[in-house]
Image (cartoon, rainbow, N blue to C red; front, side, top):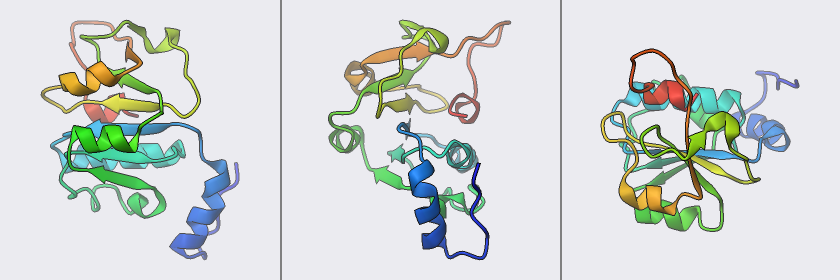
Amino acid sequence: MKIPPFGLTTQEIREELAPLRNDFSIAVCRAKNPFNIGAIIRVAHSFLVREIFLIGTEPYYERASMGMQKYETIVECPDEATFLEAARGRPLIGVERDHARRTLWEAPFPRGLVFLFGSEDDGLPPALLDACEDVVAIPMYGINHSYPVAIAAG
């Protein structure tokens, strides 16, 4: 894998990474903890996602993302309707255990998809679940009932 030299400007690094980006995005709805959001941005950067949608999330994630937000396309959407407009025409795949139709391992992944993750407490709101083409669960074992959002999105 090609890693750009650190002697480049932020814009030059973004340009170097652009052709390496994968054709999927992630969206996080109403996450409350800036450290979770920062971790998600860092992991998304490691996977070179196309973009990161933050829906109804306060923009206090910069410190927690350890500077990686500078190299990512982050689309801040104040609410679900704004996100749905921004993602219009793209397949939306919700990641949520309680409403899943199948597991992550069983699901097809169409090009350009957006993985949707809900908040730490409330999961995905009904408006976003209804807009999803599919809803998948990440398999888990034992008695734990959910993954932390930063882990699930990673």
